[in-house]
Image (cartoon, rainbow, N blue to C red; front, side, top):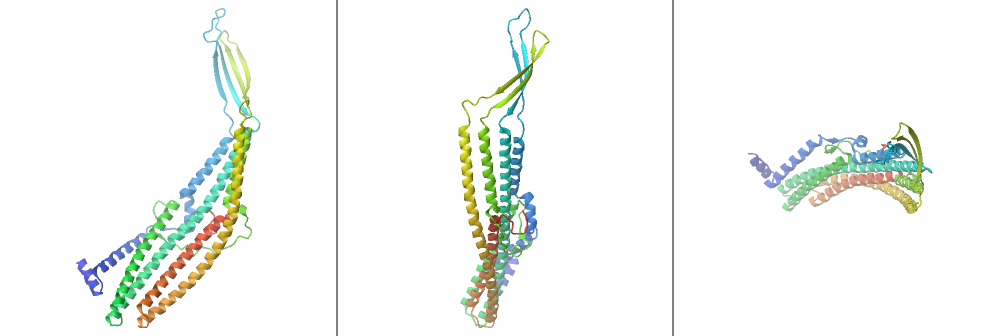
Length: 429
């Protein structure tokens, strides 16, 4: 009975049965997607950014690296462990006057690092810990920008689907109007075929936009470490992004990449001092007790030991550390120049994105008014269907350009945020 009713309705509207079935399936798919969209709606950007601090794998990885570097710094300050030594002498030696000549000696040896070796090692690990902290801050700023782009992309794909849905609705309206005009003899059958082709293209655009929206939402869910994928964006982020605000007192030192490279340069430089002191001898102080086998008497032993840097003065290790320090300094200079260039280009791109968005909004408003007037003219028989279809396509393209301009604005602000070392999206990472 269902198939018969579908066929009868399709024939009554002047469409083929296959066309009607496709529309029914499409409605079912879109209805299911709309129902699912209420099940796992993504929170606002600010809330999602806050939640990601405890869930995002990228941030958790960097936090673990910082904790590991801090633990290494604490471990570097530990003193060397003492050594316990037990020695048995004269085992199996001939008796002297019937008395055993055995002697047992028990000693405890403590090695002391001389020449500031321990202090140099502690400083090197502290520098590494500071470098890990600088890298974490850089990653957090980069993650904030990446999250903003991912969130804006998901919302943009959702808006593109809404534009495709609206285009499909307008295509249906145009098709019904064309059917009425053909029936009245005011349009040729060719116009009806064109209207049906336009509806089919709009249906394909809806399905493609829905797939893009799902892909963007899946990527957003994976980025923040969500246990279940989001199915929609509930609160608009593209419209709430603050306007571009320049930072007048910016210096290259504010760039996170430069701060991270500076900390890494300092860590490598501190390692040079460690290598310079590595060849210095360590002093071992031993205190023990000797027990004689032929009596109950005991004696104390004291010993000093030190390694002699005769063959290895770690000269090659020092040279290698110095070369790594030079490399780190050159890398720092390259990062400094890149930071200046990136800030200049990011500022220009952000300003251009602002102007592009304003122009796109004005174009969309003009295209909306043009389609309204064109539809009025078509209903009155003064505008041809071909012209109306062109106007409608221009409206959809204008709406898509506005969405793309908003998304490009977020991308440019994300780059500027990382270049300036500040979060321009309103929340401190």
